[in-house]
Image (cartoon, one colour):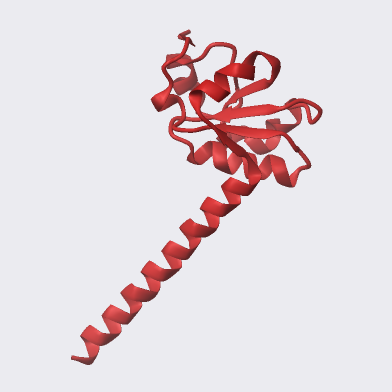
Length: 130
């Protein structure tokens, strides 16, 4: 009986820690960048830096027209390519990588950060394939 109680307690602690981490990430991403619907995203995307943070193979398979690829795996080293004086629109397949990228940019002093709600997965606008 004690083994079951201990196991249940450990599992409960793991679930609470995991849930707390997910909640922390959610609010961290929410503070780092404004989430835009596709219509809001389309409205100004020609006037901003449009960054696709997916890996190159995914980008080459199809991306939003006008986007530049800076894969999240290389983000730390290539972040300097993004100007701080212009708005930055970020997207990935769903939105988890763009959230992480936004947090990194915010910590580095970038102010105008926006993420595509639903990511490329839900995008219905113009795309380009290499």
